[in-house]
Image: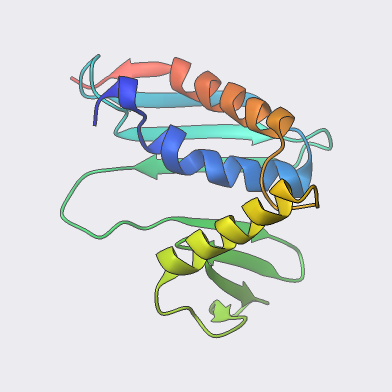
Length: 156
């Protein structure tokens, strides 16, 4: 809730930026706008556009608030198929029709994603390749996130 404690961009969008950089390579921030209800509080809305070296775009749109359940998703759009990951663990595919599951959906997406993180931590601790961020990747994502949040507006 307080800007000094995080916010949706640092806590959630950072994961999707990491995934985007793993898939597309290093990204450059083209523009961003973050809205804050107050200087002490976290952002409530954010929009940004980033591109990779080939000019492929990554668009971000996020908001918090209201009486509704949390929803997080990332969609990778392709000419022949598009893939969407929702709630960090639900993988779906579209070839032009409605998105359909690629496998059975976990009953508890939080438990599934936390177990995957712990499994990858064990690989990392054993000196093996993992899906976790390297220190260099984590720093790149942090710099992109802070760049997005620096472009702020205060809601009136």
